[in-house]
Image 1: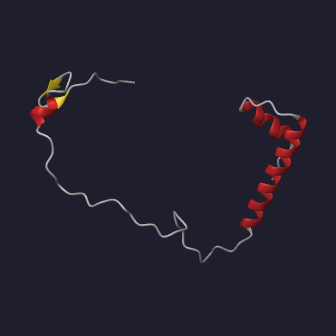
Image 2 (image 1 turned 90 degrees about the vertical axis):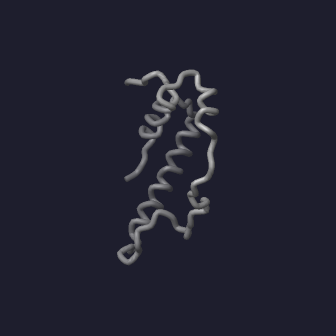
Image 3 (image 1 turned 90 degrees about the horizontal axis):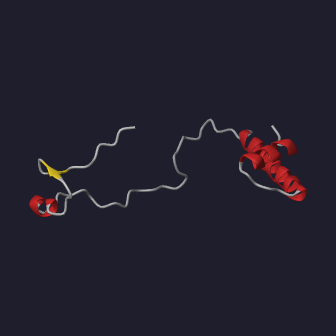
Amino acid sequence: MSINLHDVEHVAKLARLLLTDEEKDRYTDQLNAILKYADKLNELNTDDVQPTTHVLPIRNVMREDEVRPSLDRERVMKNAPEEEDGQFRVPAVLE
């Protein structure tokens, strides 16, 4: 697969970009270089490579979820513009 000048002009039009002829040529060359590199990566044998979501070992740094005392419901409801059955009442959003 390769990118031609027409493709660059089409994408520029969709993105509403005004490109000079020099920029169009440069982007055509750069995009083709990217695609050539991607094709080169497709030649690699990845049969023994396990799928992963991230290349680095990451661990969750969040704190443990603990039950802690919270604000009193009556005190919180004093700030509510409208309240119903101990909960905030908000307008329905239907789309």
